[in-house]
Image (cartoon, rainbow, N blue to C red):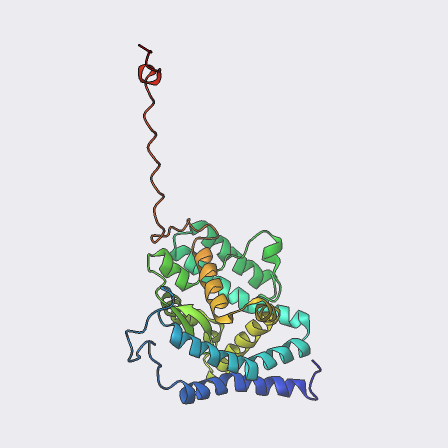
Length: 282
């Protein structure tokens, strides 16, 4: 994709569109919840999947997000990738990651993982003081592994179930638990480091575009291999979150609807030698 005549202006305008267009389209196109959706009128609609009882509503929001992505987010992300040098993009990712690492350390401690919490705290301090405020990542070279945790995972460790699968406008796949966790996570996000409203939106826009740019190749792969993109993303999201909740070692799943194994047939009683022998002739 070739760069526009004024790429910085195009990028700035794109960021504005990414923040302004989605709420407008959401207000005009999704004002009425369809049947079977949260708040909908048809509560008796059959659920295609027990983990996705709101599938009818979720698919509509998913299609809405796909349209927003095609019209705004993906073009802006491609411009960001093509215009901004790779080292600068890596620095942005590192700085945003360093801020989120601090919140990960808090969540590790809230989950009772004291060692991991202390290691993540040391990682933040190392990258902040020796990595130029997080632009560089010397902590990884020192063996301080990045172990990201969010408040949705913390709620899961505290015993809260996933709840139904839910597709959020613009933000994408989630669950009821992860949505509650996301609201808390945002209180510790990079945008909270400034009190200026305009700067908050700029930081949120940068987070959104940077994250979308990192998923450009992944999105192309999903488009190529998925027969049903919605189901593919839903199942992949739920599997990944389950894996993250158990730190990569989830317990074996049991399926209650599987029929029990058929009982073994009883062995026929062995014939006694007397009965097996032929009767003597008279």
